[in-house]
Length: 197
Image 1: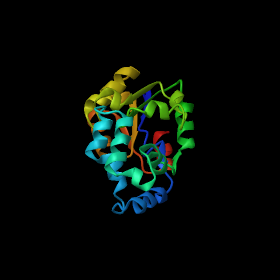
Image 2: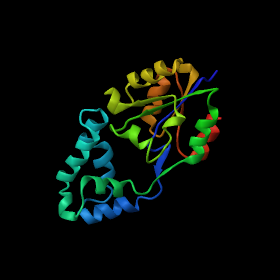
Image 3: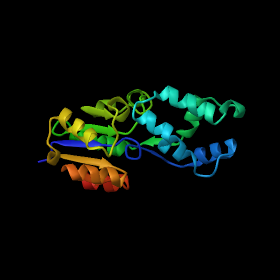
Image 4: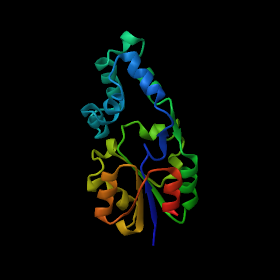
């Protein structure tokens, strides 16, 4: 019997509608095409922030210096705002998460920087949809490490086989399945809603 629904944040609940703002930033800064996503999400600097080794504020200061943003009339924060300008919240998926409560506990596991809780209260106010938030920067461990899934399961008070996990990266799905969670690989909102129900 399913007792918990656990979701990822970025790439699942919040996605980018178009990459226009990111391509415009690359042109403005003279960066190679399609390089900013790696710089912001997968560079060693980003991984340090996701592991909680540096704060989100430090991350954006390093980006500001590293990209010489003032030369282009930008700060770390204005760059951040432009980079995420086209992000949107999947309202239907969030509604589904809200509707399963209280019959099913809800959790979130996210490889994210230290500011995610604030984002989930202000920019995308969905923090109240979850019983448990497990954020890599706070826990100092990232998916697909088994420890982060176990933290969520322990805090939700459920066994792995009693939980469904939703994520957009296959490596994270594989890790969840290895622990015994029922994992749904997110490819679209409609597909995820079908598979969860």
